[in-house]
Amino acid sequence: MTEEALDVMVVGSCMTDLVSQAPRLPKAGETIHGHKFFIGFGGKGANQCIQAARLGAKTAMFCKVGKDFFGDNYIQNFKDNGVNTDFVGQTSDAATGAASIIVNSAGENAIVIVAGANMLLGSEELQEALPAIRHAKVLVCQLEISPQTSLQALRMAQENKVKTIFNPAPAIPDLDTGFYRASDVFCCNESEAELLTGSSVLNVEDAHRAGQELLKRGCGSVIITLGPQGCLVLEANKSTYKHVPATAVTAVDTTGAGDSFIGALAFYMAHYPTMPLEEMVRRANQVAGVSVQTVGTQTSYPHRKDLPAELF
Image 1 (cartoon, rainbow, N blue to C red):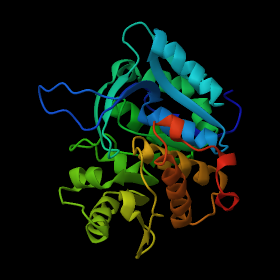
Image 2: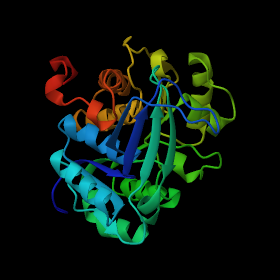
Image 3: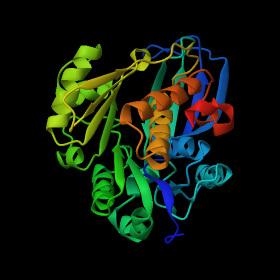
Image 4: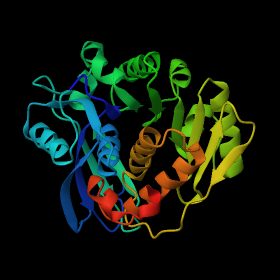
């Protein structure tokens, strides 16, 4: 495996999603009746990896799960999606990460995550994965594992001329400044941009200001996703910014849409390295737009064969 060229390596989290659909989100202390329950595969890292794989990227996942029913199932899920599992570790010291998700009839959600085994992913394992990281075209990280592990992975990738995508989610206010410099592409949504810059991001103009602030911190480029308002793309070597509007779709369930976007972006960066970033963003946005039209997280992620040919 280690000598084999990889398109995308994702260092990050696996979560088992326990999803309840209900007419609305319950208030504190209230019990309400839901109408559907299902168990799904989630976790930002794994979601991004699965979406990249479904578009045709050769992917590997670097993560940790528990030696439990959920962990065994997750490894099988990666295999079913053609993701390399050489760097999926199993531990007896913690349970597989889990997320309890409630989705209301408007498609909005409330989520509680218990990171579990995800937090035990450390630098020793990363060193073992170095040969594979060297052979990747793109490395993707988020913040559902130990931030230091993510930062180390991004730095290892950059030292080996591997392009990096960093998704600062779930956002932490005191983010290590090293993350900015280690990000070729720094991709966050409006609430994450707000938390990181301290200024509210409600529209394209706000996002432009926040994006400039993030660029100043050392990112190669910044993408701020604004849901139905599309995305903003800023690049360090260009004086102008680009607003990429989103195609209007009827959202059924937005869970995991941001991860679909990042997985698609990683695919485009690996397969079309000379394509302008704004064009990659436009296409990744279309992929994510397909995902919100179906219930579930990974179950809603489109395969290449289900998408219009012009996206490829």
